[in-house]
Image 1: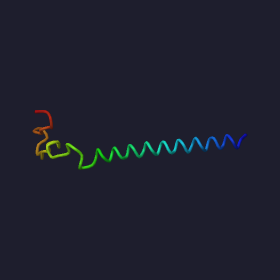
Image 2: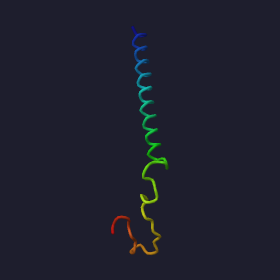
Image 3: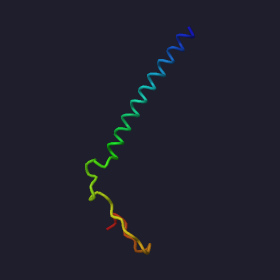
Image 4: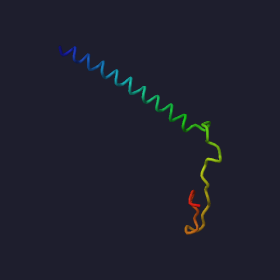
Length: 65
């Protein structure tokens, strides 16, 4: 009886590991597509404006004007 319970636990652990690995691979693939430089809308126009600041009181923040 104990052998059957152990065998069932091993099968459940293998199924959970396979499902977890599949979810991880899908998430990693989607993340890679989001972060790739070939993605749509990754052109220069979508990047925020960066400014060199000499005085913190005269700083222009992106989206405030």
